[in-house]
Amino acid sequence: MSRRFAVILESRGVLRVTGPDARPFLQGMISNDVDKLTPAQALWAAFLTPQGKFLHDFFLAQAPTSGSDGEVILLDCEAARRDDLRRRLGIYKLRAKASIEDATADYRIAALFGDDALSTLGLAAEGGHAISMADGIAYVDPRLPELGARAILPAATAEKALTDAGFEIVDLTAYDSLRINLGVPDGSRDLEVEKALLLENGFDELHGIDWEKGCYVGQELTARTKYRGLVKKRLLPVDIDGPQPPPDTPVMLAGKEAGIMRTAVNNVGLALLRVEHLEGTLTAGEARLTPRKPAWAVF
Image 1 (cartoon, rainbow, N blue to C red):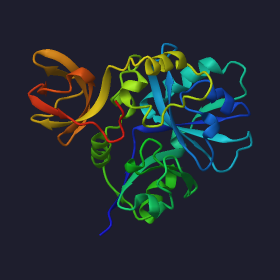
Image 2: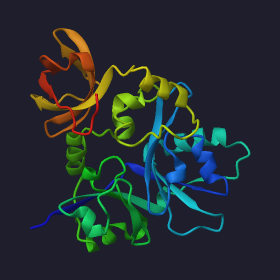
Image 3: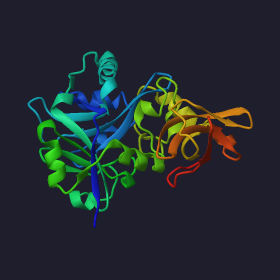
Image 4: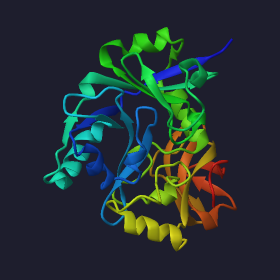
């Protein structure tokens, strides 16, 4: 029997960006090319400090119909940190004719995955491909099609829309297991705010950076890291043999620190590891770790 699953991501919120300057305003702020955003194409991007360190990541989807103030761009972001994202973006808004509103109460974010999930929704297996769904938006995860799809749905009808589409509602553990096994980070759960570098955490290969667009906040340091080959660490999936170590547990190799644990579930986790220390016996707490290089990673 075909198994298709959906998780309502309660940890996610939505910011609504509108106004005639919404697109050019965001273009100067974030790591991806907002000009590539259309009702049929969603994006994943990051907002950085001027020094190129991680602050926020989010998905961008364009509502299929315009509002009274022009196009509507929805940011699928971390709910607990949406006020900070809104505030930080607002610092740079200046005279731009753009409005940033908290629309979390209006929507629910869902992850959809499993057998034939994309084809069931009418989505092509192409990162970011977007369509209308139940008065909302469904799109292939822009990072990896293997992650399935995401949806931004009206809060009042989200669960019914998912079950009507043939998806079984499950808890977050099922989705986290898929995500972690694929080596994909989940915002500040896996990236240390104001310290993490995008290239250490797969943003290049996972399509979160556009190298051809113009300047954005933190662009110079990000480009320098890439072109000077300064990436010394990578976030990688690790198989865990022993008690599951909590986030921020140091990863050790022969008595020396080789990295740090991030999220983990069901005996698999993510760890930020020094590339030079991938060989040998890695431990975290009382557990032994075996790192795996994802098929999509290039290093």
